Length: 352
Image 1 (cartoon, rainbow, N blue to C red):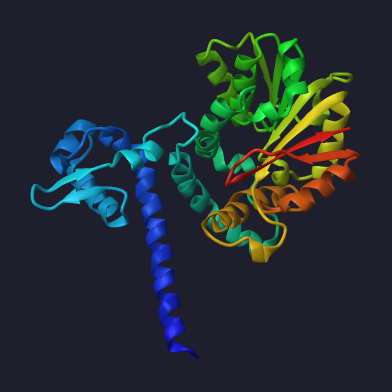
Image 2 (image 1 turned 60 degrees about the vertical axis):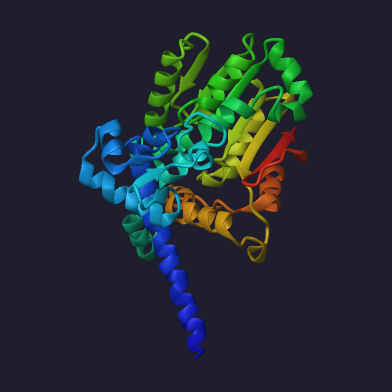
């Protein structure tokens, strides 16, 4: 046995444990508003942070120390002051933007809360269904995705790759978001295309409740429709010019059947717009921080919810080849990888 290799690996385990603790502290920073409180304020004492945030001083002090140790905050030992650098605030105190990373931190306790039940599934089979992640899960996913959908799913953004879709929606076409979650895709499309009819579909009632609340808060309840249904439950003959499936095909219990149903809902000239986590087809090419994060998401959330419902458990990192294979098995004949730059997502346009 190589003792140096063992020693080096022990250091890696400590680093991973430190990362887990940092994510937990980061979640607290998002949840309590500490990052927002410190953003743009410059150097602050622990007492000033506690006063500004209206939080308990001793907890704030220890949190500040942990965030300094993790490199999230800066510390000046002479006056004993702390600072959230602007470059870090850009990512941590910017909810609603396309660069906010606080949603990822908010997802961590949701995932780890499910870990004991997932461990049982390793032995007994099955998994943890989506609804068991509850309100916290719905909200965390919305925090991760909402900003980028609102700022990029636009005619000047991602949809620039699909001019025919833009033309039809501007003329009053019909759009459907399958697996709509808290509704950000639907509301974004409705704002961008005032003449279009936009529908959001999700079997999870908690998600639909959040989506309807978001529509009401935006004064758009009359403009959009959210339904707690599966694709098979839509009215016979109801069809759409544009269907979006954002980051959820790999979660499905019956992906081929669902895609066949989506194909039946799509007009002959229509486009299915698919977003999936960016992953390579080969395991040896899926290395590094993002791939590791995605495999964790898969075991603790995406794959297990599919297996919980008797599905294939495709997993977060199923890759582009498997995605195309699913589309063709469902009867689609045209599959295009869109030239949209992203380090974390892949984009596809699929047609009849």
